[in-house]
Amino acid sequence: MAVQDTMDVLQGKWKIKVLSSICFYNKRRFSDILNDVDGISNKMLSKELKELEINQLITRTVLDTHPVSIHYQLTKHGKKLGTIIDNLTEWGRRHRRKIIGT
Image (cartoon, rainbow, N blue to C red):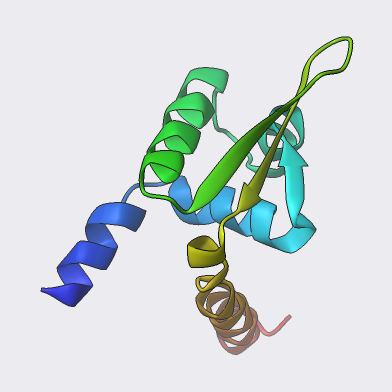
């Protein structure tokens, strides 16, 4: 059941990529994440961020600036995924070297 719970929260094409962007930089603006995640639309990024916020993995902070600036960052709960994301990154690098040789 625990694996299914995890997959329910992280499922889909974009969530791990969005979390990776926020995790790597600690704090990101919407446009930064949009630039980091190739192929994601504004609408889809907005949806993914809302779902991650509902699941308490990220926080959304609205700054009183002109124009208004919004930052996203991992919650304490979300930071626990950092090790998993790092492991996925390292495994991906090793896998690419094994398959492609680069």
